[in-house]
Amino acid sequence: MIRDDLTNEQYHAHDAISSSDVKSVLMSSVWHWHNQERKETPAMQLGTAVHDLSLEGGANTICGPETRRGNAWKEAQEEAGDKLLLPEPEYRKAKAIADALRKDPVCAKQLDHPDALKEQSIFVKCPETGLQLKARPDCYNTADQVMADVKTTVDPSPDGFTRECYKYRYDVQGCFYSYVAELAGWDVKHFIFLAVSTTAPYKAHMHSMSLEALALGKKDMMYALKKIAEAKKTDLYETGWPRFTMIHPPQWMTTE
Image (tube, rainbow, N blue to C red; front, top):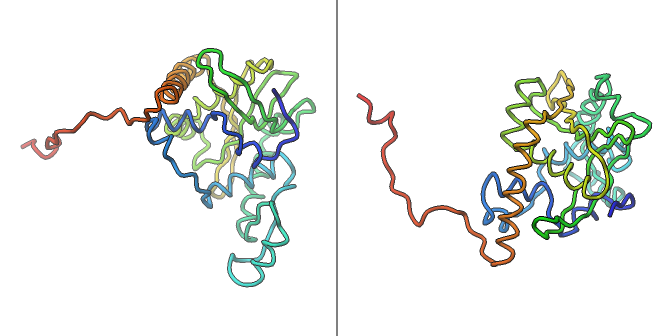
């Protein structure tokens, strides 16, 4: 099922398994995933604003007063309603980052493609695990069958973002989005990241996942999905740690 009428909040409220769930299992354990507390940080708000400004023209982001203090901020919050309210300096920063994406012609081509579908909510059932899955790709170019995800990052350079990709398992996210989309009937020939720096001078760069990266990511994705399915079936959410650990001095302390 593909929906184009859900807000970001409505999508996240759905209890299907997301790429964030899969990454949490891979980077920690099913115990950590099952017991995690989801809190929105300023960095997450900045990323949300950049996504909105670059994909939706900023329809859901409002520039507020200079700071989050005082009556002016409280009044702005009331007027903002469900929209994201940012202090003016943070809004200007988010706008500068979003503008950097369009200053890069390769990134702009995907964001502004006439056949691009943006922020479609996809819900499917995994045939291998029986789990309900969900994905909300930032952009899908139906003409070229290219799926794109906007990523704010410390370092969008070729080497820098590659390190960050595997640190945070963005590769698994790309595979998960492609997998869910293909189950829903979309063909995805290429998965790309539109990476943009969060520090001035803001610069964007496109990164495309290789066949090797996709194969490794899919293998790890299926491992995590099966761990989640098993935990749900048995109602056992474990860390996978041994019963106890013997502490030994590290080599650098024992070398003469």
